Image (cartoon, rainbow, N blue to C red; front, side):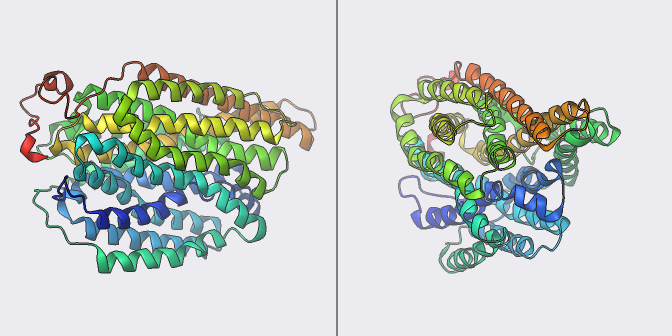
Length: 495
């Protein structure tokens, strides 16, 4: 972890990291609106085309477990430049892709670079600011992490309406070159003081584990859970993840230190963020499918629908960070998740004639609810950790965001596709209108399952307590942090 001075944060470093991260996070959802066009262009199914998003998040989930090691082994400058270079290569490959498989490979290369940026940026933000200012600092982080993916569909809707989806990649290339050049010339070289270790067995286990689970879930929409090509990867993946976690607990220098989950507020934060992301990211794909495939609207209409929600997420992320510094996490999380549960339930009642204004209003209010949740909960969870566990906490947070989003997309698309297939199989000579009705039923069922995920997050938020700010350290540290001979206490001089 870079040695940063909390009283004088290196704003030059933070600004350049934010710029690069904004572009990479934008690509998380940049293609969501373009998925119907990509599906038609390459002649693939709905379940197959979701791999444009799922493969990206899958590789991120595989790479992120190594980032705690990378942050201790290499400087922030070296990691940033490597990440941006990989992202540039992946973007170029994707832009020139002549076939669907090449597009997937390009997205995977993109993800290998992007995966390093989120934990790196979170670690810098946590290390650079004292606890009382971390809400505001993490608000800036959330601005990038949630505003960029939220505004992606709007930008891509405008572009896909008038140009080929390939332009989505071409337009990023000059910005990536600019950020890479500025980073090369301006980023400071910060020496490392931490001893780092890499464990190849852990990397293999995490790759097989997360890859197997996500591949199995993503394939289940077309083949069903009972199919051997779905069931075997799922079981192997689950077993590998279990072995991976067990190995980390035994290693003297784990790739990811799961002892962070001995801190109750960090654990609760992970449950809330994971469950909420499963509904949030899946909704960003289900809505474009509904508007374009069911209602026959243009990509531009889809982008315009999502624009107000994106602006709300962008405006409210820093504000919610400041509100966290004042009110703490519980009130904001309960309010935000209540809003998210109600609005997501409303989205499970869609009809072919659902008005655009209804969708717009519900999506805006839903976005408002989500922005009240992410920054406060994430900041409170990170505040509960001692300094030496911060790199592991930020890496696990980043992995959780990517993996939960991937699982949410794969699972809810599977719910939609399975319901649709069952309904169509029971029809005699199904017409296009009948197939659309079945697909609509699948979309509604998927949003209903998403409502259940958010319900789990809402119940978990009732147990939130504010921890690890300057006013509680010293008088309640024993309550906020467990007594464990293997876990080093946070020394005030380490701040």
